[in-house]
Each structure stands twice: as structure tokens, then as C-alpha cells.
Picture 1: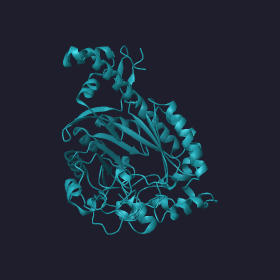
Picture 2: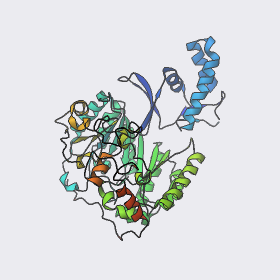
Picture 3: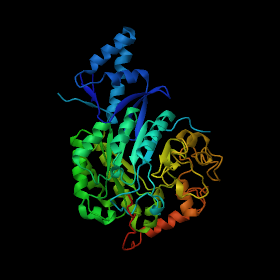
Picture 4: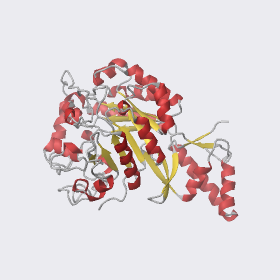
Length: 94
Length: 362
């Protein structure tokens, strides 16, 4: 289970893009895609092979404000666990 | 009534194929469709699709690898940020060519297998290319390309669903599609030999359900029920002219890959007509959108915006009327057609397939 100390990467099959016609962020994968909110797209854009979830939370707190820290931490974990269940992100094993 | 944007372009680059699968969804009268569009026209179609809102491109056929310009077509799509899926039999494919396609921008590869053994594959495909396909699947994962394994299920192979899932796992697939045959085209001609019994189907579904739970997050396990046993029709193409545009090898612009088998249509054609014109302005794309065209019991059915009235091609090929309620639906007055086919599935099947064939023209 992904937690704040996990390192999470985007699955090779998934690609983030902004759809200018629909004005929305999409995460595309074979034959499908899901629409991401602007903040969810922020999280996905920050994934790389070295960055811990808590560092992603820190970057979003810097962007959206300290007052939102608890909500950000909760939303980031919820999003990443949901995406992991779909095989769109995976934990990098140390 | 026109949906604002289509999501997926299915580019059927050619009907040519080295395999002769007895359930092929290509037209039965293949020789009528020899003409193929050139590279420049396909690039223009891709540009038009992207401008119209398409985000997914499925390169399909026939066998798209038989097009020498595949890398150019992939490159054009990727430059427009489309997600590019190659839907292939993987015959003929060399590792070097796969690497070239990857470099051109290919996002994902779907390889069809016919069975888990060479003999089983040859029985339905007419030729044995099993080992070449397995090698291609291994190169796909070795190159880091996401792999989907697709296996069309029928009564001769459905009892090996567990083996198919194990094979897909061993090959490192991200997704396995266990897709029961859709009975159109060649498959309808071979239905008595292909349709599984209910007992076979339920065993296979249970195995797939167990694997889906076990492999969650690692490999997606998709099991597509045959609508002959589903009691309600499938939402064919997610509804006519709602999400998909199919362009056939000769340029016909269609709401589904079998729509040109329906009589009384004047389908638009590339490059003479643009995709935008096809999507927004043609009667052919408009005809089965919404629910005004529906007969009863569909028109007042509370599922009419879930299944969109099922499959128009199936309705036509089973009843002779494209506007009829899909006979796969238990509420169809002609559901007896499907019930009789199920009944036949419990009897001994005929001895041989009618193989897909096509004189190869270059």
C-alpha cells in the first residue's frame, strides 16, 4: 500500500496530456483515458523515479498553501492508491 | 444531437493479412475492398481527427505491419499527441522494426494470440505462426513497450482461459483481453462451430474473475461476455457515432468497422470528405444517434442510454432490419434467433471452419 514514504512512478503505458479542445487534463493508456482535475494532473506531473510522496505533498503545499496541508496529503494518497489499483502508477521498490 | 468530440480513431490501414482467422471481423467479401489510401492521405486523416478531438489512435487492419509507411503514420500521430496503439497479429515483425516503430512514437502494442499452443493457433488461423508471435511479444516487453495480449474466445479454446492468463503473465503483459467472438462477418458464417456452451462460458468467466482479483494493479484482466448469453445487448462502439470514427482501408468513414455491411447508407469517404464533415454533417453518422430512431421496446427502455440500442449490424444480419431491436436483448421480439443459436451450441459442431481468404493484391 502506497504511503507518504513511498516512491511512486507513472506506469510506462500511461501518458499525461492536456486536451486543449475539452480544456481538461487526461491520463491516456491503451484504448482508454481518464480525466484528471488540475490538482490531480499536478500530482501526476511530479511523479518521477526518485521522489517520495511526502516530497510531492511539500511541493503542492508550497503551491496551494499551508492551510490546505491535511487535505492535500489525504487527496494525494487517495489519488495515487486509486491509480495504482488501475495499474497506472506503481511503487518503486528500493 | 451530435456529440461534440470523438475520442478514438480506428485506422484500418489494410485488409491484407497473413492469417485467415475464422472469426475475422473484416468484410466477408474482401475482394471488393482492394484500394488502399496512401501515406499523405492517412496523415491528413490523423490531423483532421486530432482537430476534431480524437485522443486515441488504433492502428488496425487487416495487418497494419504490412504497410511500409507505418513508422511515418505513427510519427504523424505522435506529433499531434495522439496515444498510438498498434493492433497487430505481430506477423511479420522483426525486433529491429519494432524498435523503429517505438522510436517513431508508438505508445502501446496489442498482439493477438489465437491459442496457447502452435496447433491450437493453426486450427483457427489457418497457418501456424505461434512461435513468431511469442517472440514478438517478448521483444515488446524487452523494449519497454506496454503489451496487451488479445485472445478471441470460442468453443474450441475457451476451456484454456487459465492457460491464456498464465501465458500473458509470463510475457509481462499489462493487460489481457479475453474477448468472446462477436458474431459478425466471418464469425457469423462460422457461428455454429464457434459459439461456446453456457457451461463453458461460466467456467471461463469464473477463472477470469479470480485472476482479475489476484492480479489487480499488475495486469488488467478483461473478459468480454458474448452478447448471445448476456440477456441485454452490449453498448456497441459506445453508441453509434458517439466516441469512435473508423476509417476503412479504402477511405470509407464509418461509425463502426462493420457499418458498410448495412444497406441503404451513403457513407462519406476520405480524402474527398473531411472527418469533420463525416462527424457533424452526414446523415449516415446521424442515423442511429440518440433514441428517436429506436423501435419499441427500446424507445421506452430505461437502459436505452446505457446500451444505446445494442449493435445495428447484428440487428441487420440476424433480422434483416438495421432498425430492429438487437436480438441479443432478452426483450427483443426476435430473441428466439439467439436462443436457437445457444441451443445449437449444445449440439455437435460442424467439422470445419470457413476460413477468411483474400487474394493478396499489391
